[in-house]
Amino acid sequence: MLSVRRCSRTGCTELAVATLTYVYADSTAVVGPLATQAEPHSYDLCTTHAHKLTAPRGWELVRFEGEFAPPQPTTDDLTALAEAVREAGRADRPIEATLPAPGVVQRGRRAHLRVLPGAADEEQ
Image (cartoon, rainbow, N blue to C red):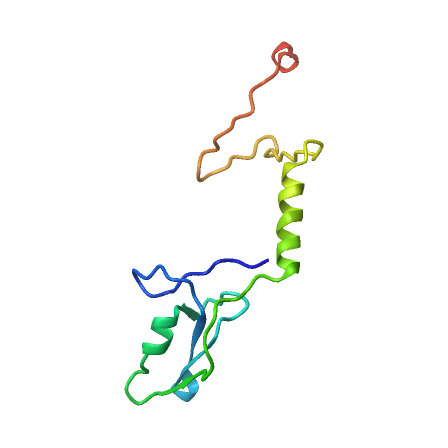
């Protein structure tokens, strides 16, 4: 499914259209079309930042020569989104609840919901 990604530059809220990747072994910075998925060691850039980027001193910059354009949703993306919304809205959808095993202490964030003993549990 298509996700909306924003420019990685601090303070920029524009849509990402390009991906910046550093190849440290070759001292090269590569700016190309937006990668299909966000990667931990790459940076998404908007059109402005993709065109204005400069490489560090002594590095080579390889930049895509075509026009950067935001990715367009395909019919597969739209169909997957519609199916997900339909599935989430189904009234007969089973609700899965996972409870910790007895005696297991959970640490960290407190839950918003708590399991309270029912009438049958109080009689025992």
